[in-house]
Amino acid sequence: QAGKTKEEMAFVLATGYGRNSLEDIADTQMSELSCHAKGATFLFPQVHTVIDIGGQDVKILQVENGVMTNFVMNDKCAAGTGRFLDVKVEDLGTLGAQSTKTVEISSTCTVFAESEVISQLSMGTDKRDIINGIHHSVAARVTGLAHRVGIRDQVVMTGGVAQNSGVVKALEESLGHEVHISPLTQYNGALGAALFAYQKYQKAQRA
Image 1 (cartoon, rainbow, N blue to C red):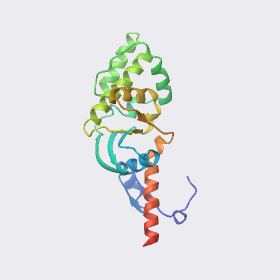
Image 2: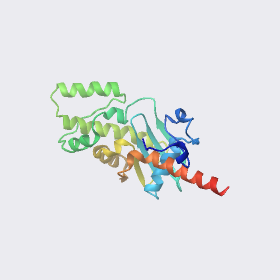
Image 3: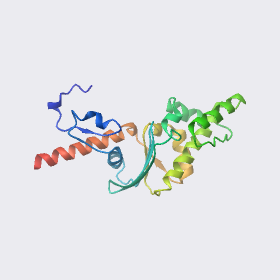
Image 4: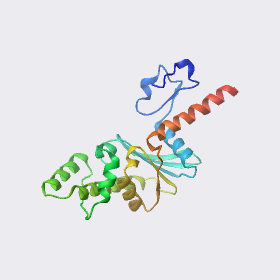
């Protein structure tokens, strides 16, 4: 899509779940964990905790001097991920902010949580209150995961769900820390991969 041939690209680094499918064009591969730490450090040089909520999983990274030192992730269930919030995330944040009462969504499984949501809707519960309840449910699960590796300022959130202001606010309340986000949040892993690729190209040139 960039309109570049392989010969025109100085270095290609593949990351993410699909990195193994790019063996024919990638010069090397790297874990998305390292790339997320790298990208977040470029955007927020003082970062110590990265919370990445994507469509497939939740990752909590400990970062020291731009390098990931520990991590924990949930990739067994969609609960607490972007797939659980499978509508336009910006709209969710706006609607959740209009909530006037607390609705508990307690199930840790997305399938059961969806049943809770349907039950609430059938009882006539305002959808804005339900959305707010979902935001706090996601935040509670992510916070539980984050405490397994520890949370230190600065806390940076990446992934598409970072565009949902309702989840960001609920996380800040649950974690007790300010959560920093960037307009480049969805490109954080790709940004980190590009930075690694640039470093590896420079090193090869000096060799």
